Length: 115
Image 1 (cartoon, one colour):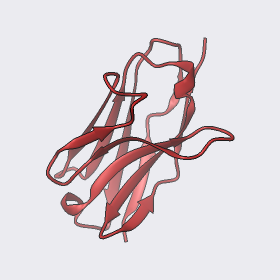
Image 2 (spheres, helix red, strand yellow; image 1 turned 90 degrees about the vertical axis):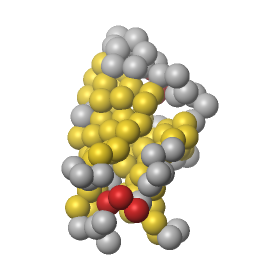
Image 3 (tube, one colour; image 1 turned 90 degrees about the horizontal axis):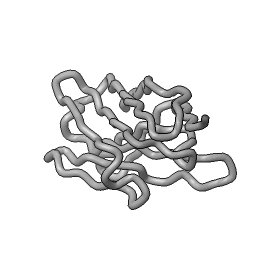
Image 4 (cartoon, helix red, strand yellow; image 1 turned 135 degrees about the vertical axis):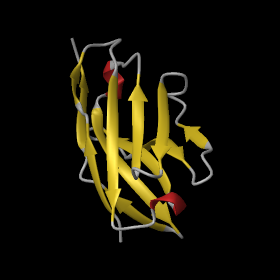
């Protein structure tokens, strides 16, 4: 079992930047695939970005070129740098840790993009 705690959400104007962080505890962090998902009101949860144990990454089409995911296996953290934010990026962002098909979720952090 792994516990995840997100931080870094908030209110930002369109075109601005935010950085989200997720710290994990209770596990061998390096073997997990880590990801950020988001869910807006009335919509399904969607993948924002993921990073595998080997460091390779994947991104949702709507955030490619704007968001960057990274991980630090020593600190047991995964981060999401979000640039050029748009109102449609407004959602609750969730940290996810996956290993052998089992998902663990954080409690979520709200990101609101509005002028």
